[in-house]
Length: 617
Image (cartoon, rainbow, N blue to C red):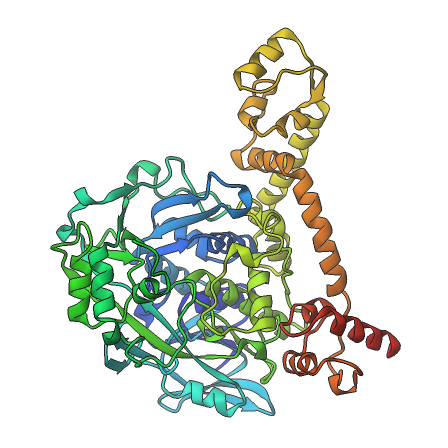
């Protein structure tokens, strides 16, 4: 049988890629080694977090599934950083590890144009540097016009604990033995990376009196802009906070050489921003303690995830470590922590569309590109699915800019800078994070989702109404003035705020830090949604900063419009620094803007390149 698009791997990237291509009308096959592991959450039981939560909102704005699915499986919902500005606020949900995959599999099975096949892909079928399908472990060949690889941590996967090395996937499943060798033979540079996971604890063996309860928010939260609440705040499950002790650190230091990493058994490079507990104790030796969270994994079983205690120590040492923690003195470990190594490609061998530079119509997404995290994987999968479809349709790819989305920042970082360790998205990676907020993801990206065909007329109609209402509220507040009447100033003093000396518009009044939209409702009857009112309030309070960020972004966009021809020979560009010449030749940036972000290419090199391009038309 022949398909238009084959997606290899059923993790978060694979699900989004397959749904995007199928919903765009392309006959799609999702190949996974184990259907039971589709949309699996092998590590933490959460969706979202700093920057990551905004990615989930962006996925929803574009027409992806992760946000809607997370809403269905939410155990606890929380908005992070509420005491800080909107630029760093983000949602984080505890997600049920049974409900989330079940709902995603149900969505996949009920999507037209999408088939699911349980098999292991061993190699790609490539004809004249163009992918033509896949070959399975049993020798079966399946033809396709495009292939998207979303293999997660399965390429030559090895699980490590102490001196023990076992070839297997995260749950003891069969690893992919031959596909990364096939990619290497095709010309891809292969990297060895590592990640890890902590213990799962029996909730009935925890002394919660020694922990600090962490409740969810008291107001309903949703990732999806559909705003369907599946679990009311009163029904949420609590997490609990504890800290490591001096005894914990003493045990780790005493047994350090027995861990896979410090014992010399690890080949791969681990994540810098999600280190093991051994790494934390060594690298942050000045810290007296490290915080850990006890997070429920599901309503359907008793496992508690020990967030922040990832380790590759031998099991018997993990027992001692866990029992040194407050409340876990008698804890029963249901599953021990481990590290996992796997192969990934050099992400600099990708175009910004996520199509590979080496094989035409071959796309990659997720941990195979060197990222960590469910959310980063899902965002890439969605873009890969969209762009593989657009390529078959003869259309230009969807390239999200750095001022438009965190997904754009993520992909640009991957293809322009590459990775040395598993990449984690952070708010600090975005130059324009005030523009890339949790609250405005739909305003930034829903038009793109509609244009590529992943947003229905009904959903787009609701979005259009929302935009119109935001404009109406803004106009109403600008047109309505308050004056220094006695009763007006008496109310303002109660806020408390400075009484008026002259009249001013309600929009300008809202700019005061201590004034909220609730205060504005004292003067106006505003029958609009909280989302619409929030958007107006943020725009008013941060108007100057937003204008400044947009001006900076315009400078960047001007450089993005300066296209670099595909056939440029950097050896012929005189006076370029040797490192710049080498990096430009390797990465092949498509615009001057992208070239300026390459490590080792300095402003002088960019000026020389621009002069050369002008002289040569």
